[in-house]
Image 1 (cartoon, helix red, strand yellow):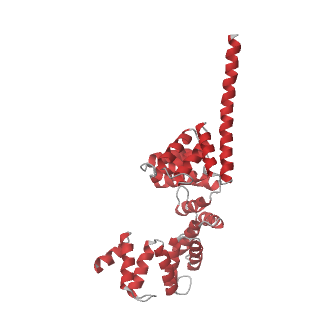
Image 2 (cartoon, helix red, strand yellow):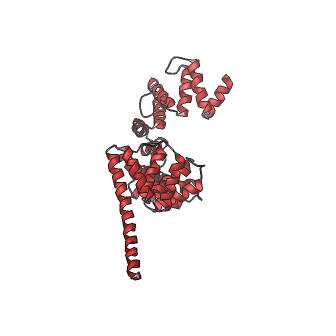
Image 3 (cartoon, one colour):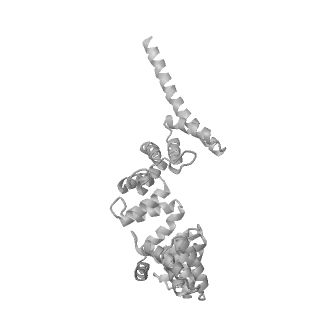
Length: 318
């Protein structure tokens, strides 16, 4: 009789475990359905039920809501707690998200070693963005010992997953021989693949290559073309570079008023070099009416941001 009772309890225990697992998945699916329907109240309820039952995707999702302050008030400490629970259980998305909190000091002090640790796990578990970041970490030595070979390996893996932003970075590695022999042809090829995906960094890198003549003949027209494409995509540095080419008449006819407009756009968006240039334009009346007040406004902003020429100039004026 005791054996029958024990066996029955064993079956009930197994049944309860299976029920709990199934219920966690059901709660998470309900949360997704509620989210798609814009029902945030029930979404949170269902997510919390799934989290209570140990569903790691739900735990990561709830952490993300606290991380971004969506639906719930932003709480980076709570986000870190939830990410950590899911990450420790092997959830790759949570591992990646946790690495970012450590990297940028969000909800905790910046910790390069922990950021690298979780980034590495996320990359190993198939997150393409983590692969790309890991490639950058190995290149820069962030949280680990610099290793160009591993930088190239992980960036190549990110490209193999068709991650848009990785093409320009792998092209950069080929251009400068980072973890691989220099190959300008390969660099151009990967830049062009990135450009085909509308990556403005790939546009910028290819423009830089033609502007400087790094391994190719200098080509101002091509440089201006790619700077213009990147500028149109919102790359503020490229707005500045395009302005400089218009001012100098490189790859196009000299256009000082057009250059001033672009410098102003870039400076207003925080581009430090453009702040200096627009300040000097106002000071000298170059392409615009002379205005010492405006000149010193922009030059002081540039100086505050660390622009050495601006610092020197402002020091003399003040």
